[in-house]
Amino acid sequence: MKNRLVWGTLLLLVAATPAWAAPDFSGDWSVAGTHSKKGAYTGSVKVKQAADKSVTLTADLKTASGDKIAWSAKGRASDAGISFSFKMSEGLIGALTGSAFARKYTGSYTLAADGTLVGGWKTKGSSNPQLSATEKLTRAAAPSAGKYLSLVRPDGQKAKEEVVAVNLDDDDGDGGAARDGETTVVGDKDDANGVAKENDLLRLELAKDPANADAKFSFTLTDRVALWKTATKEPSSRVTGELPNENATLWVEGLAPSDAGKGEKITVKLVKAGQTVGTDDVTVHVARCAFHLAGHGAGGAFQMEAWLRTAKRDSRTQPTFVEGKDEKAQKKVFWAVWVSQDEKGAKIALGCPDAVISYDGHSNFGMGFAFQTDFKSIKEFLNIADPQVPVNWEYLRDHQEHPNLMIEDSEYADDSSTQAFSDPVGVAKTVTGTSGSWDTRRWPASGGNGPHYPLTRGTKKWLDHHYGEEDNYRIVVKAGSRDMPVKKWSRIYLHSCYSGQYYSDSFGGRGTLFFTHDEAHAWSTALPAFIRSCVEGKSDAEILKAINKEENLNDYVKAN
Image (cartoon, rainbow, N blue to C red):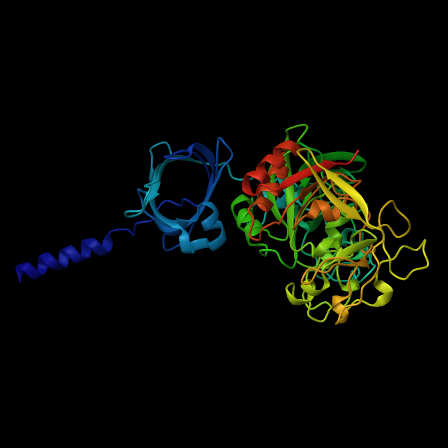
């Protein structure tokens, strides 16, 4: 009986003990660490902690030499700190295959007396080589809400400063179908009829002042942003005058990129009886525009998206937001990066002022880009070429997935200055970059200093040709640039076979054209290297060095 009483007492004591609660580690933490191979680095770790003490951690780190270290982990919190594990892909194989070749890591952070977390992570098991890192994490100050104005971040936190993209896509699909010969897509920022599926505006909360019930809010903002009462930009909802002193949700739209190191200040005044009784403001950075165009024949958008997953500043995609520097001022700027795999997206990109653009896919012998297969006519390509170009018709049918491609006699190239049918002139042309020159030919619509190439009929129509030999016949066709928007880009990289020889004229005259002078390879890591270098504020020469480090067949020419 005595033993039973003691046991019962013990049960009572345990039951009376208050339930343990782990500290809440949720939030953003700034990191200073040292990697066993890469050296010192800094960055941030975002921690999310659930009620059951499970945690997720997302790290965005950068070494002194500019290398990115990014990982996402799962673990558990305790009163002593956090334990976690993750996989991290590294190098080219990791970028191409993802988790299949990722290393496994384990780690832990211990809560120090000063509120910091100290610890690190290392490779798990017998992985060779053994890699590790030591870190100290300091909790970042939480974003603060303003007196009257608070921007709402993608994670729901309120802040006084945030980033938005130029609203140049077409969320409701009424900006044009980008059909053959249509060079303009009306973006949402220029849509006067509202945008039913709008998803690119930034939420702004307006808080009333109970002490001044009869006052009115008055806004001041720059011409690079617009303010709306509705998330769908209903025509009558643009904020142009006073608003009542009430709680309200407003929406900020990006119209043009901000200057380096600056943002667009939105200021509100609370005015009562002609007197200002309160003020507040927020800052919105309108990001610069970058695009990756993944055409047919590319390795997909995998490489670019893999880099964006490590470089992104928040959860938003299409566009993905990354932080960089201005080339001249070396001040902080933000970039919005879109990935497009259709002709409409390509036309939006090519017509975007001061954009940075990369293209990956087939050159199609200089006739234009393709974002689909089984084209039946020249017009179905994105026609951004010279007036007349020689193509291997049989190869386009048999090897580039256009088995039904037909070219009419009326589309055969010609020298209009002669009476003969389809006798184009081949004129010698040299494409000169910063590190070399490459010979090719151009085929003017009329005249030219060069030999004529008469038409030879083949045993099948797609074997008609102007020159070449069996299995490599070339027929010169009327291509043209009827799909080319007004050129507005600042830099463009055409990662396709011999893009310099094919496209240096049709893409010349604007900004800097980076091109290949040999056969380009699918799955190239030169594409994210190009966009990353532009984002980081590198010069043309530095960008060339970066992409040639990944695939050494590039050069560039800069327009006057």
